[in-house]
Amino acid sequence: MKIFLIGFMGSGKSYWGRMLSEKLGMRFFDLDVQVAEQAGKSIPEIFAEDGEEQFRQMEKEVLHIIAESHDNFIMACGGGTPCYFNNIEYMNGAGVTVWINTPPDILFERLVREKNSRPLIKDLADEQLKGFISKKFADRRIYYEQAKLKVCDEPVHLDQLIDKIFHA
Image (cartoon, rainbow, N blue to C red):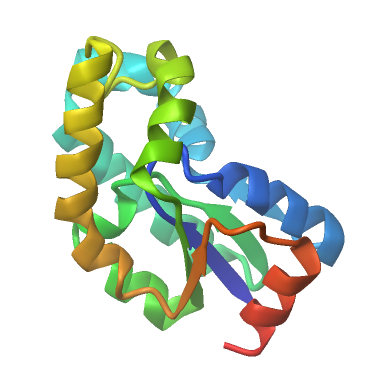
């Protein structure tokens, strides 16, 4: 089974991916980490030196390489992954997509602490960050809603998440 976790940056995709991986004994991939390894530089360096367009192209290529070379895995995708190159359609065809739908106010609380490590928001003041989250979330929602499974950021328990994934 191929499980793709999607959602806005800060929604907990990597956290839940690691938890699911450990519980299910499946390999875990963080797509951003894989792209950075493939490029030989960090995501902020890729954005600064090559631009977002080049990053998105690398992201798509690495997504396809992993999906086509592994039968079972859990992948935490970048927040924008489903929004480019028909990636959401590709992931839906290859496995189960799970949208971790975290409310914007919780995203803000998390992202304000992580700004320096996130190239799209590192230069934003806190008020600008609120606007960015609101706009980007609205823009990306149409892609996130195409996921096969939606998990709201209610108190989620690992066993409930697993049950939802395997009975989607």
